[in-house]
Length: 187
Length: 201
Image (cartoon, rainbow over all chains, first blue to last red; front, side, top):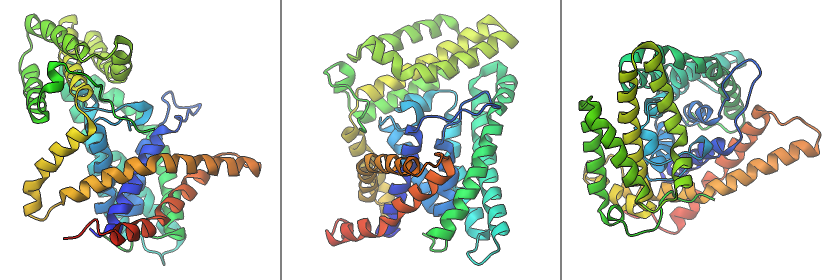
């Protein structure tokens, strides 16, 4: 990685931290408040690509582990990784990587707008939701002991909120590609 | 604005080396998951709580830090109670909360710089294979801590600009300028770092 890549990774990690400082959005039709932080995971992949995006997420997780309260709601420290939802945090890293892989491979600056939108939506849904749940749900199920099936099922409450975030990530990813493209120069 | 979660003090946990604390935490995690006997798990939870409070953190602050994670633990325990048995619920609750409290105790007694030193030491073997450079990791951590307040202030400026123009503050119209403005700084910051020779080989 060049110095510029390291700076981009650090700045994006800082953006993810700031997204956690913003007050959570509450939408009328969804019972759970939506925090913008997981949106940052999708955006990291869509904007920086696989390697730099995953590195930015890993940097945020490192800050959490060394005891900085950088997760939404001022959470931080090793306790977060000891809780039943730690799998989602691990999933963030792989999610950003997969999201970046899809965005890097299929998003081109000279594509029609619709193709770019569809690429970023696919990247956000596959990387930012499917891969994150792939790590989060089994971990939660394992931590829950005998009620693994019920808790896994209950975690699906968050899917509608995540779909909205994927939609926002799609719009933002396209806008950044048009305004300040970083995807083409891969790390 | 970005302050660590460590608390000054000289309890036994404060004096322990970081690596020792992490190894013990890992061992405790494995132990807690092997055991499912309440006669061991309940005292283990009590011991973890005493250990966490012995770090000199006040009761209120101690609770504030772990309440979110404990809430998720409670939800999981409640699911066990509702669909299985009270015994199962208690086992899960004691096991997970003991682990959470122990982890919080390690965080409360370890400073950011002590953690960074340990991480640098752990990364040194990887450096030999060319995966990652420990100095780059600490540089990146420093950059994040330096730029979070600035980016947060920039977010405030963007929402102010919206209000001054009578526009509604929407996630999308604030997010895109925030990201583009922030990432555009990367070139100047990178040049400044290289000009100072921080990443010399």
